[in-house]
Length: 106
Length: 439
Image (cartoon, rainbow over all chains, first blue to last red; front, side, top):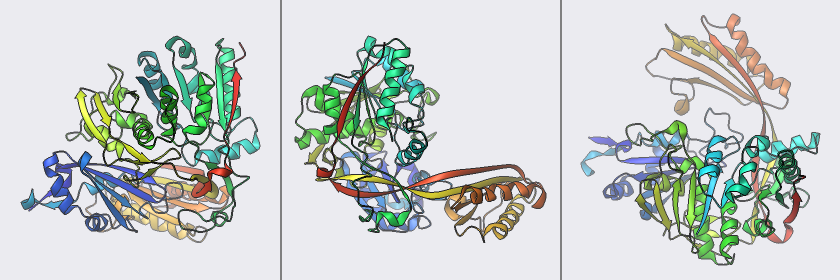
């Protein structure tokens, strides 16, 4: 059994060059420890493997119930030169929210 | 207390919200952030053809409804719409004000253009390759900070117009000016930078880029209002928007914007400070009013980031739709035919099937077919003429492709790539030019 990340978190995508930033926020602060446990940098990279080619760094921001993922080489060469339909990687936020989290831990 | 509003968050932003903000927001300052990274490179090219151009193409449309309200409302504008030619932008505004019979002064900040002092063989921040190896360099603009904008505010000008400056500095400068802040007071400038960072994308903190129906509902999205901040002498602020406008400001919209595009929340580097967001506190006070405090910082960096624009060729693109029976198979056949016809001319060619799973998978594979697909093909070329071949081939599918292709569209765009470098502050000198409208 698992639940979709979308049910407990919201996300905003940003871009800098060929780097995508994905900010994940718990709707309920009580779920923040669960996010910290399940949403590792490795798990995010694995889920977004089609786009994220480089390293993923995770910052814990408990002051805003958030995890900040900084994904390198994630935008097919970057905003100004990428040929993809979404050079900014705006769609990656909702893409990440499709991730499944083990439900037994919720 | 000082009130700063943000009336534009990017070059193509909507025009009306800024007018509403100026009319009903009781603002001291209205900031208009309009400069994307590649915009300057394109502006620089326009300027080569016409020395009086190169500033933001929407400058006149944006300023015309705002200028008549400035004196009446006691509001000053700070904007980076100068783009690749701030002096010409300043003259344009002064002339426009003259035509409208408005007596104002315009202060122009220059010095961000460092093309003549930048070493083209300097390593890029991205991968260390020399800047010149990316392509023909079109522009090089340093991110100036609040220190460059401050003299313009001290001149008393009604409108301050700049080229490339760091976005949060458009807010930090009025704060430092109003409260007489020492720019070396890193914690205060750090919190001021938090305020600037939160405001700089305008509608993105009032419910834009946020709505997810059923999960994050936004009332009145169509009439999205833009934000302002009431800031105290320590930089603590209350974010809000004009009553009666659409959208919302909540802890969630503020949190999302706090981390937006931040690649290191422990050290967000601007020309003014290295800001630390780890102790920022976000506290909702009442509907559409959120208090933000606690930002800190470390002293500003010795180098400034330079955004270098280079010619990255032309991108040709075409799209065509297939719907109904066997839509997927026909779209795929069209993609294969296009690839066969174009691959020899385009080393970089991409075929996607929109409506399938294009964003994740590239060309659709092993998925349940739906009823409608839009085939997209895109490639890069050195000349406009070659890039146009792509659209021509897509259009030619109408009579040379699978059955029932419709809605062919074609586009060609000149592209400016962006790469970054660091430059010592000692090589950069900001200048101020003050002009008066001819009334």
